[in-house]
Image (cartoon, rainbow, N blue to C red):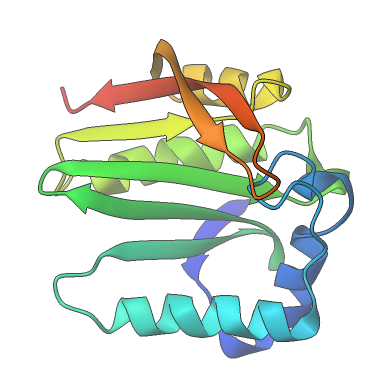
Length: 162
């Protein structure tokens, strides 16, 4: 059974494992392997964000039978508008976990927000299928500037509260 839960300090090894291997191929760092220190900083940032009112971001661990296999984030961009992003451990791809998590975050977000956006790397069509299954519609594309200066034309999606 899949659950979404707030991150905890002791999730550091799980977060480091999520942000490694093929899972980071299409992230902003394009292949950057997270260190223990990076994982601790990522969790600390999530915990700090949870204390801010109004809350600017929710970072949920995606857990299956207690094992944190991914993360999904909801960031408030402006009043009524949020952005969704997610990442799963490579060994958990293809099981519908990202789609389940995305649907739950959409339901959660629409208690406060009116519209959500998401985008994915153009070489990661599986992420686009996740968004479509979660109810998002592709609007077109937008340039994503990588740390190495390369610009990728990323598909951009949105979903509006019914």
